[in-house]
Length: 280
Image (tube, rainbow, N blue to C red; front, top):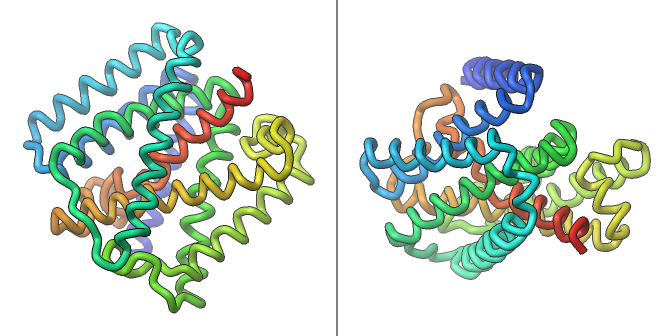
């Protein structure tokens, strides 16, 4: 299983590297396919049939890609600021609902599942493209590192010291010790990055420089919380649907939704924060 996971990860990284090398349109196209598959899997979890799910996913992602191809993204700052602000608040509400119902879980009706899918996924995709245009792949990678770092650190810290379940009714393997470990390690990593790395297009460097150290820490802590919210949300949806993985498209990893769940709240929030700094 480990070899299969590694092989799949290597193939995905090679595709991503080629897309970045080939230029902005190639990158946007590859990411449109990726987020389209996330949306398709999310809609399928919501009990939508494969044909309508594929049509909705294709229409939404082709529309978003067309906006980027038509160079409309630079004119959408206020649109993204307003939409992503609403999306960020919605994810915050979801996070507190997950913590409040951590012992008994909660129901998510079909309409809520489908509505969040068709709003949250395109918002994350457009945010990714905005970040790419604002600071190239370096800015995008720095945002993803918050998500990946929190996920990896929470896993290993939870395995080593985890005793107290965070949300046993939603995701039994997640622990408070894992979450605390993720917070400590990720925050220390990005503070060290700020001290020793002069790259201006690293997300946390940008926030520390323009908003100050304290606000930078608050922003980083909030993004880690949102990454946990996205992970728990998918776990809840899969638990309600009675499935282990969102699909089997990625051997050893499950589906695209499984790999992107924690990124979906973070990308819009990171974009909103940068827009708030730049616009005001």
